Image 1 (tube, one colour):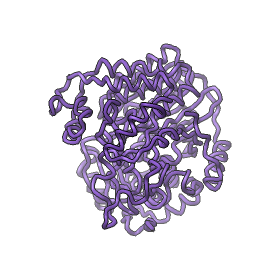
Image 2 (cartoon, rainbow, N blue to C red):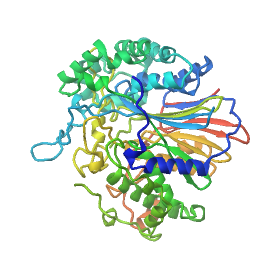
Image 3 (cartoon, helix red, strand yellow):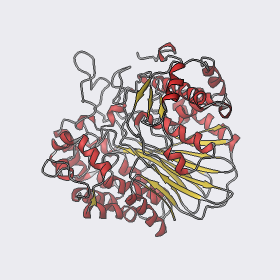
Image 4 (tube, rainbow, N blue to C red):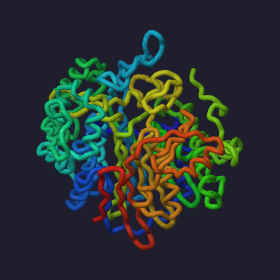
Length: 566
């Protein structure tokens, strides 16, 4: 269970390390005094409260991150859990260091490039999204143990105690989770253990019904007592592998035993007067964010009307998501042109194809060389009184993952294998396309859009992230721009959302985000539209104003969460 070291720079042809070190030296900020307050924003009040309770008991932001993650695994099982993985972006106030903990799931050793294709060479329906064959090796338990051992002050068992108690005693079903159960009712009914937890005699329970998960409580206890070792080794691991293989999966004992989290250098870059610290590959989020903001950095957005600003933001996203499709994947397997994504010269070149009076059809851009991640993902943000901070985005991919629970374990398997490009140019569940860089391979980590991010200026700091699958990066981009324009934490999470991801060539917009006149103005420029849901994402934000000392925590009003300052 010891962590793997940071990826050698040579694996990325030196680009990543060079870019990060150069930018860190060029943009270092003087550390302000500690905030003196604790703040957490998460997708559920019980998770937020658990994190604050751990802080009150003497823990730090990293202990709180374990507590919040554990409780979310219990009360938000459609979004994250023991069977999933994710990314933890850390800031250590004592030495000003930023660390990215990669706990992304890995492909089993028996995985192969074409494992989800039929005889006709096309993806088999649901093969990468349903059942145990869709599941990668979980990273979440390893992440909790890693955070507790290397950065926390409290034993893992103490930080996981709230999650164990809530799993055993139960929590009241709330409307957001009830809706998710309704969407996946048929699939959950097909799994005996999932049906026993989430359905009442095969039916969707009423809001307020108590959801108890005794098997999950026992699994969490096993993780807590053994610092996750007994999850990846021994009898429990053998039972887990047997259950996965019985359901058609391809896990082995070695897959679990060989799983490690990886510490990576975060992506760091400048936009306007801000330093952004964000997610490196295998997250696509940080580099796509840098790509889009690099393009926007060449314009005076404040001088434009709302239509012009939206037009340029969409054009920047169009080009950045195109680059995502071609270049990004697991940095342990492919060389990634990090310098290109961070280069002002590259951004300037991108701008040459943008017209202020006309949208650029995606099919006229240079095509991707081809030789939706889920809205159910979750994010939380933590700031402790000493200035330590965590931005964490964790997931099991689609709602309820693979909708399968291995008997006796109590947790849902992920369906993260769908985040690979299962066939070159074939869209995943969110319409995202990919190329060889993100092809399936044994031990490889699939590309993600999860984008936990810190934004720091001389005036303060923003901790931000969101679920939303392919819309995560555009959600975070909007939050960054909103905060730099002076909006409060509550205003940032409530702002309406627009999204473009290169393909399909449409603007996805949240219902109510555009007036008829605003849509008509963008259509006149050549943009096409597709109405989205009434709300997407579930953004969680913490801000700290250095001058006033004010700390704010805000949870997305579209969700059921809570932002608390203590």
